[in-house]
Image (cartoon, rainbow, N blue to C red):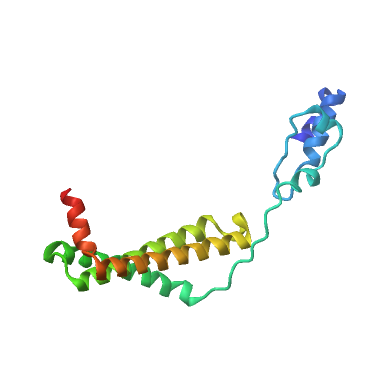
Length: 172
């Protein structure tokens, strides 16, 4: 379109030529057109390099493929998710039992950890929050998971247990 504007006799006016030149010069590598809203940007001849310097993507190195973070990881996630169904059913049917309470105290926090880890991987990656931010979020998640595991162990061994807690909360 910018080429048609400069080739037509109507575009002989100075402002139209400046606008067409600005649009032509602002075409980026990805065929994006950066339209300058102000006359001063078009008149000063701001180029695409001036505009795209602001929008340069953060370079993020994609990690090498790893089987432990691929199909094995996915299989372990599915195994935990499927294991929750009979655990909850056994707790609901038979009531409080130390084995089901212990298994629930391990499987539920690890299941939650994997879900939050996937959220961190997808939405809080190093390209968005920086390498240090990503590492600190991952370590905070790991620390919280360990604290929850210790809390579940303490609650199951020295208090009424998870199944009785849910039963009392349900009846309240």
